[in-house]
Length: 533
Image (cartoon, rainbow, N blue to C red; front, side, top):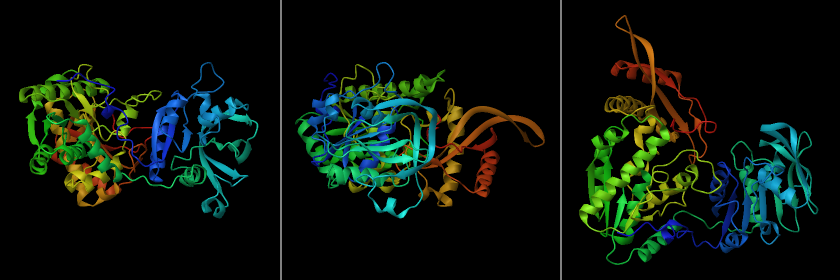
């Protein structure tokens, strides 16, 4: 087998689309860059996130039509703040700075930034003083009352030479600025969040009116490029092993391999026992028929439970599960002969949330990113690492992915292990699978599933008092969660009817005696995350 080659084309940007139009987002921390990137894709323009300190020469190598400086937690007047290469702001390429990005632009070009008297967070009134070029959409002309979403304490006090005020807040603070001759613009607020009405229109003005993009990005264009480049990378006689979990992402990877190299790959589905009820059976039946390559199912349920014994910390669970996955694949591959490549369903949010992009804080480790061992001994193939979840779903449907998989709601790589708070045991898994199955059955019966991004149950690890047959008992607490989202980067809790929640609670507590109480999670993302661990 080959040693892992981190500089292999398949581990970097080998699938950057040939659209001729790219926007570079320089990431200054947090998840701002992901939200910005997602909105740009919605506007049908391809974009790529790079660390804030990427040299200008490397940024320009991508031939970007424009550059966006994201928000971040830094302050430009503190010691050693995050900074981009000064050449980025030389006026050669249009630049839009958002929040921290605007403050950095103002500070480094001769303006001044100071700590404000109070932190400005939430919906804030917006007064446009110059509609062109960022506020020229009809939305801003047709609305008398405008607002935006702020999240900052530092503010631009004095503009750099050559800049004009484009908008102010109701209190008079500078909300937007621009240097028309050098195509440099700044927004103190966040256009990328849904809480800023007209935010996407502002981004479109930057993309189309300033950067002159035509909007030719579509995920379906990605398929033929991916197939061609996988064929170019995998040499004749070399074989690929595909880590097939049965989730959307790994399933689409399997179909890309199916289309590009036919029988020269083996899909290994590891039943770790951490799936929802009956899912392992469904996955096996679908892919045994769908794929040209060999499909192997490995029963590793006891093995994973043994590895998880005594482990309670979420990050440790994720890394143990990830490492065990890889070990199972390696053992299976060794038993079958020589494999050069490991293909897996890593997508863009996995990378960013795991902190794999430099400058990004770790939100949570994904097993296919943070859990990989140093001595992997495969070259990674990750054809979806530039795509968002909804883009992957669109690609999968075009490739003929059965709807039972294509419409499957997002499911964490570590499975139910991160929906069981505390140690994972066989008894807890069975209890959670039953409660989750009841919730899913009732959701689908009432057709709420068409409106939801995810819906599931969590075993909270809490014991609460209850009453059964007139006697005092203690039992587990199950939490139900149902959320709406477009991309998983932000989410809101779904307002399920009280009568429905009452019915589900009654079923769960009646049919599963070990459960004493049922509660409902009403936390959005942010400040929470979709999963509890």
